[in-house]
Length: 146
Length: 130
Image: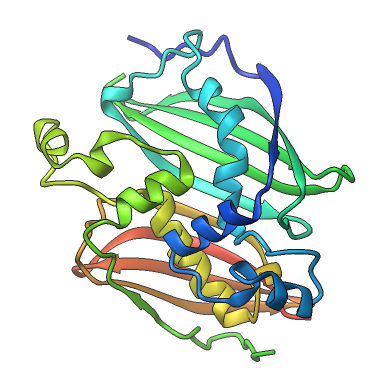
């Protein structure tokens, strides 16, 4: 069954994520971050940040509310039984700290078939409350046997 | 801040994810795909057992870069390819070599290995070094 490419270019409604101090600490602990700027508000302030700093990979957390509806979009109809996360890129802007509100939009960048595999590439762009782009991400999912 | 020069390696990061790390990362990230947290489910779908979240492994690659560069803001870009599977309770090693330093950006080629197998490969990081 060939991949369905009608959704290329489709965008999804933005989602706003309020960055909380305890969530940043929880995420930092889960990925083994030991830098106190992620864990201790005093250390973060001493280093010049308004509050604890999200580790770069916290982009996963604030992007999730808009990425989930995108990859589950019935118009794209990804076969999850044989899907793997093939590749990922993040490009970061200014740091994200607790108290920020991050608005993320998602779009379908590419869908194509190669060597019997379907490639589904999504892009998310996340901006803070000052409209500064804090992260642009490219998410590549690969489905075997399309 | 640490000096990064072309041809030099970044400090190696070694970490052994404990038995429950996939559960904590599921809660922290919101990714509760049962292949990461349910041993029986993972085996039913043909995996040897629960596997690590690729993005958790990518976070270890990111940590190796921010540790090398001297802070979270210095990581400007990270691009990876996921290959194979990572498993809890087995040591993971992240290594990297500075390919070039152009202006105020160092480009690092980096990989994550477990049991001699690259589970993240062709990864490229850009670090602000100015």
